[in-house]
Each structure stands twice: as C-alpha cells, then as structure tokens.
Image 1 (tube, rainbow, N blue to C red):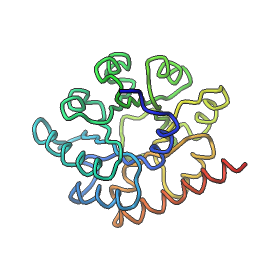
Image 2: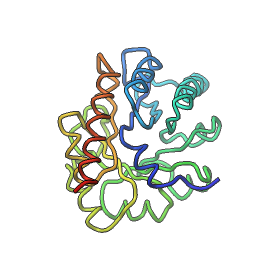
Image 3: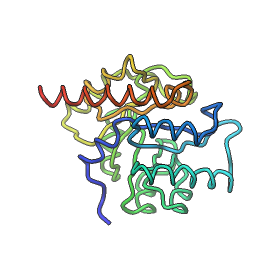
Length: 225
C-alpha cells in the first residue's frame, strides 16, 4: 500500500473534527453523525482527560465511530494510542511531541496516515524527516479544551513554514472558530481542526456545514489569486 497522496490529504484536512467522550455532554456517536452530515472531512478519536474511557470500552467506541467514518469515506485517525490504531486498523495516528517518537510510530503503522503536532520550524522540519504525512500547528488561538498546550502561536507560525518553502499538509489547531478560521487558511494551512466548536455546539451539523462552506470558499479564492 502506498503512502497517502499529499494533494488528497490537503483536501481531507479541510474540516478536521477531534473528539472523545469528555468533550461533549451529548451521546458521542450522535455528535459525530451530525458532523458527518455537516461535511467534516477527517476525524480524530482523542479519548483523554478525567473520566475518559479505558481498555475494551475505549476500543468498542473507537470501532463504532470507525464504522461511521468508513461509511462516509472519512479518514479515521487515533490520537496517540498506536496500539489501538493497529488493533482496529485505523486509517492513521496523530502524535504530539511528548508522545511516542515519530520514527517509531511510522515503523509500527507502515503506510497509514501519520500526523504530528508541531510548535516551531525545527519541529516541522524534523516531522518531515521522520515521515509525517501532515503536521498540526498551534495552538493558533487560546483554547480551553487542551490544558497542556504551549503558548499561543497566532497564524505567523504557519506563514513562516510556508515562507521557508515547506509544502507538507498543515492543519491549524487551537481556539479556531467560524470567526477566525479564514485567517488560518489565508496564512497557508490546508485545513482547521476543531474540538469544542463542534462538540459543544447545540447544532453540530449546522456549525460543521458553515465551517466547511467557509473553508472551501477560502481555498477557491486563494487558488484564483
């Protein structure tokens, strides 16, 4: 199996929804169904935090979400838990700088999608060397969802990476909303990743649909420039 096509991946990153049971007060599968209906393009199962599922319960939920994603032809990514991703044959894994080393993860998952969180230019360059298919960059804006994040980057980090000629697919993360998402795309990101903007919305489908429409229109405008 060949590595994922970068141009295809850039489109799949457009509206990248990240969620676990601790991120919503609703039934998780219902939220994800709504996000799928709204047009999300990639999903990451991030089951972390106080009260998060463990063991077989975590694996069972992952499988249920994976079925929904496969039916919708949406890549299903597992956050950090490499063994879970292998056990259920997920489409890929996303790891942070404090998680397992990227080279080790690549060796274990073969040609599956590998995403790496990055916070400076050196980390992006290292991620590329280690075999990352895409990098997550942020936090772009202040966020309440992840308490262990680095300092807020703004969009200047994304711009810096593009100005240095690095063409790896980029997804911005951290505090992204409808109001600021366009700035992330204009800076050079291929997509936005969101947790609470969708998971805590009363109308996840509507929010996802609006974000998808915005991202698509921004990409079209940039390609026309």
